[in-house]
Amino acid sequence: MEDNWDTIADWYAAHLDRGSPMHDFARDALLAVLPRDMSGARVVDLGCGEGLMTRAVAARGATVVGIDPTERLVEHARSIEAADPCGATYAVDDGTTLATVSDSSAEWVTAGLSLNNVPDLEAALRSVRRVLAPGGRLAFTVPHPCFEAPHAGWADSGDGTSRRIVGDYFAQGFWRSANPSGVRRAGNQHRTLSRYLMALIAERFAIEVIAEPQPDQRLIDHQPHRAGLPPFLVVRGRRCGGPAR
Ligand SMILES: C[S@@+](CC[C@H](N)C(=O)[O-])C[C@H]1O[C@@H](n2cnc3c(N)ncnc32)[C@H](O)[C@@H]1O
Image (tube, rainbow, N blue to C red):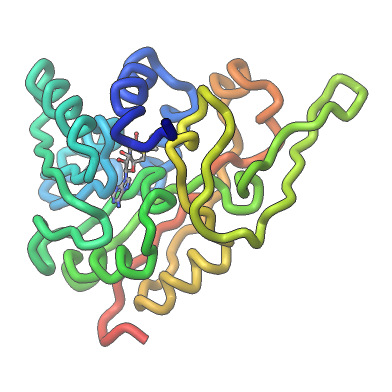
């Protein structure tokens, strides 16, 4: 049977519970483009999973709701909240529609490694725009489109170092990693860098931050071959007035 988010939900929650340097690095890279003090801010964490980012945003003082279509992950998020409350709430919902979220009800939408799981990026950005108040912001991470394209791998360069091999950059759409212990064995969507940025521009987001964070020491210690490339792309955009283009 092929995996999907339902079949890997328990594994993913346990993986993060053990402490994943890669996921902690991704969370911190997204936190780096958010205000340190988010007191009073209303935040929607799109594709919250078991709540890694949701809890971090709540810890900055925000009122945050995490939404995710994978019921089992929302159950995990709720039981972590019950065991160690930080004020985060959760709903089962799809990032494409954000049907449980009212119009203009949030100052921020965060999306940690989730927009690459949404099948219709443009529909998701329309929904993000709908739920953001004027001037509200979207901040997201995705696997770096240039280096994490479908079936990218590592090659031994012969001098003890590894080089990234990327071949299918233009192969946009759904793909599934063959790595039996990788998250993307559940399948995910590849999009080019320009596709992400142009979709934001089309939805009238002013791009404020683009970052390609260098792996931190903990991640390098865990995966030394990752030292020379950014695993993630970080983008922050502000919702501008007027109709989408
Ligand atoms: C790599 S996990 C990231 C979870 C969390 N943000 C984190 O940083 O740990 C990707 C998440 O995207 C969610 N996802 C899949 N399809 C989605 C959709 N259509 N809308 C929103 N989230 C979706 C999955 O259920 C999963 O929780």
